[in-house]
Length: 528
Image (cartoon, rainbow, N blue to C red; front, side):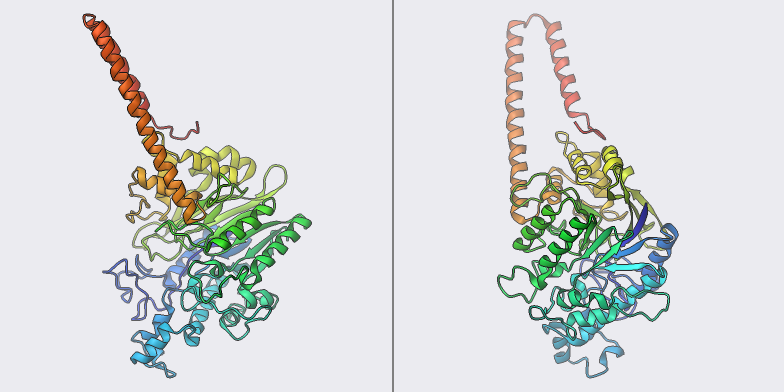
């Protein structure tokens, strides 16, 4: 058995503590240009170098010799284009003045070379920090929407060509070099054909028994630009994906799919994250090679979550043998505490290689100054699926058992859903969306949470909500009819036996005790 370190959404901001720092609009009182009280960063800001290095130092303590390190996208801070509007001498040089015209050009041009160069530089700086912390360890990454400028904007070369001098060329040039002799670059010359064509590539790990397909999911985003109409396979990535998975199947290898934006819904606004035609194509391919794929790793949402299919119906995730796992973020921008995963990889009984378990580590305090600690171990948190995980690892069946345990017992919230929601923000309090250690979530909130875990498209999500709402309404009608029947029954008994006061009292007491048993019990850790 081995293990690997999983980082996501680092959003490294080397300008934290300066007038060029990025600040979230969600936290109006946060000033990311002042590091006096917040040297390791703060909620509402992207990750300063001190926070990234602190995370890597602790990761070295708990994962001393990871087989490899994965970074599931968004290496770079938000708002790189806004750097050219900040009041800093660096961005006044080379004709990038602070006048209105240059600010507009930097912030709103379809492709601004200097902004893209800066994004590539920041991405390269982050990878060098990781590679220096884990020398001689492979660092494997996927591109995120904030790794290009503007956000979600990526110019692709003509069919069959390589973008050596464009946006992908700038990123490749920054990610295939390091300034340290002990640090291995993330990309190399062999990655050029596919990376310069579409921003994707592969790595073989675990004794060449497992292939990691590093997907560029910007191409499938609902916000992706510029994209001609009716492009079935941007960058020929789906064709490449099918060929690699077919090769794995033929050679008896397993595959891990890693990207940034997941092919599902977000948990903030419950919006569809991929264009529908690409969602269908992705699941068509993964379903075809379901016996090959052992992991689907994504990020983007800054929270530790999963997605799992239970039924092969339109708009819902198909019932695959592996779940979609979403990694927590290093950046504390959206009120979450910085966190990362250490994932165990090995063989299950029978010899198949699988993802076995996950340890999650996060900062201890909301001011990030008191160090890091283990937040939880997945198998110990979701004991309802322990027996399945012992045999199959982090399999689809294990996650379907967990999802089943999250369903309400009548009007009571499952203890497993409470745990899931509490860990979404990696130890932080409450974001007002039913997530966090202190959050509350009513019946409607819980239905939205569960439908989000299963839906692949907005249509599937709305259908799920409608079905659950009808179920609630139908349940209310049944309960109402039952209550009416009970009232009529006891009324009749009262008329016939009005003189038998003692028996009537006994009957009333029995009815109350039944009601208390039904409404007062939670199934806790059991699946019925």
